[in-house]
Image 1 (cartoon, rainbow, N blue to C red):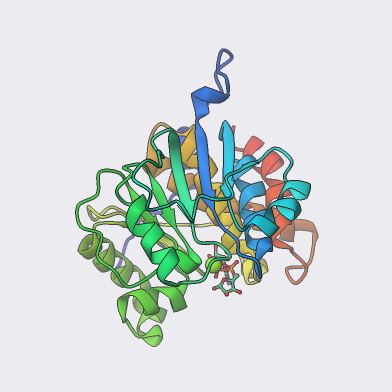
Image 2: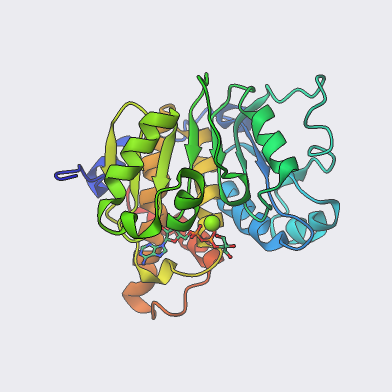
Amino acid sequence: MDNIPVWSKDLVRRHLPHRHPESHKGTYGTALLIAGSSGMPGAAILASAAAMRSGLGKLVVATARESIAPIASHVPEATFEPELMERINDPDLDLDSYKAIAIGPGMLPDQRTEAAVGHLLRVGKPLVLDAGALSERAYGKTEAPVILTPHPGEFSRITGVPPEELQHKHAHHAANWAARLGVTIILKGHNTVIAFPDGEIYLNPTGNSALAKGGTGDTLTGMLLGMLCCHDNWRHAVLNAVHLHGACADEWVTTRSAHTLLAHELTELLPTVMKSYE
Ligand code: APR
Ligand code: MG
């Protein structure tokens, strides 16, 4: 695919939301993050902190009971819903109050996760699927946007497209599968591409090899969740989150070695990086 438009710095500037003087936390909404497992609490910490930094009003984290203490010690602003995964199929479980939902960081792609995704797709709120929540499945017609965030290996796993096919034709395959599945696909890596289900597609111009390290994807999922809460337009939220996540890595390498970035440092850089766009 040639001539794919770039979601430029100027476009981010023009589409960043303002925080209104009279707003309160309810204005921006409550996000639900389902993440982490007993062996992988770190992914939930990274995604929680990134979400809290990205404009939402409140954050509820549904995670393994033993992960709550470590997450709370890193992200004291978060609240918790420890039994949510056990109750996910309970018809009385009401998820309507959430403004946006993300699931998958630090989770295994098992039957329980798959059942949870099936339920969340019926809630009708913007839904981000990452890591363990990515699977080969159909989405049917969904009321609200569904956003998949695969790296090339995950994209291959969920579509069957061989990894070597993605090297030069990644945008073509992302666009094809976004249309076919009726979802938005953020195909991550060098030259991340964002493909919407109606054929709209953008290249992200930010990011660098400092991001090639475990945890940076979890941080992106958190930023997506937070941005979905503070933007009126969900497409702008997705595009701005991907751009700003990469811009934090670009800021890192202006003064520090690309070898040394830790995923949580993206979240620490976001306040000054985002300010430079306002
Ligand atoms: N240039 C620009 N951006 C890059 C580059 C690069 N060379 N390499 C990686 N990135 C960016 C991607 O675009 C994405 O935003 O870094 C992020 C990496 O995301 P993931 O691949 O999802 O990594 P992450 O989830 O953090 O890795 C943790 O996920 O796949 C599982 O188990 C696996 O241990 C791994 C875990
Ligand atoms: Mg990942």
